[in-house]
Image 1 (cartoon, helix red, strand yellow):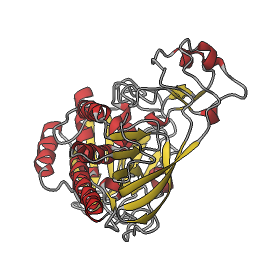
Image 2 (cartoon, one colour):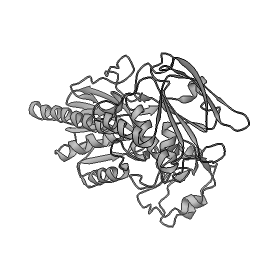
Image 3 (tube, rainbow, N blue to C red):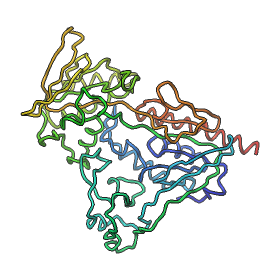
Image 4 (tube, one colour):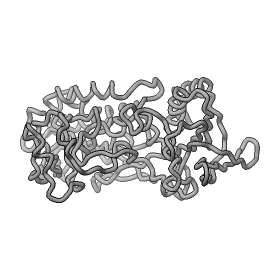
Length: 424
């Protein structure tokens, strides 16, 4: 996918670690400005969390549209080399002269794959689908999702039945190589941008809110997959306990956030994301009761207008107060939500069919080099020149802000490349 030698002849290249929206944007901007780029992503596909979103806010347009354009830009640019199922093992050196070692896990499926699906049809192993937050099952050999880029199957070898080779015999194109081994590559680059992204906070750690104990307590990330047409319920929002349509839904903001026992910071986007998800519910269930429990409603800048319109148009009941406890009713599996109503100065208890926890963003810093410092909340700080952080590993941010930040970091990285060229 590139016409430069990423291992030996690209000393003036930029290494981008992380293939989510920030990493892809950074790679595209640098490559289209004329700089060779090596893009490394640990999963089997590019796009990160955005690939699993149903809609962006505030325009509520579908992410596949923009991602498809970005993937085409990557595919058609000879200055971009992409490694998936790859992780940065080490990086050392000085600005302009870094040596990076990446470790690439075997895909076990070659470029001869035509996506016919015959391999998955005969695969006897089913595992929880990580793309759907474990709410559905998938095969050990699979395409990660319908828009996966690269559009190529892969095998989660650790899940395979011992000695099984049914997929290999089913593939008429001989695209399956069960003997593939892990490989390592040593890359010479001028600078590196770390766009390693975020993960949702583990809601099971918040004992009082019932996630993991009660099936009808889900997270905002799970709801986003549930409402997608290729999601676990085919685009329907249903109670996990019985598959029924919810008649009342509670959004619990700051689930674990702004809490010294969990995440002491605000993730900044959760309020707007919940209001966006309220539009999904209203579209599907016009008569449903939607309540949003919040500490402070934070929808800064251009998002204030979106919030005001969404609240008014969708009849969202706002309750200023922190939810203290969620308890399941044994017979109905409805959820009793106990919260403080700050404006009325009273404690309140209500029953809901479904509770959605707005969990915060946790920066993924495991691949950051030792020289890159972290702030008080664990987010990355650029240590430049030469090593930069971009996107949500740097601070919680919405998609548009992450893209702008990634573009800025691409410029910084290119300036470092130019400095190397000028000084040798």
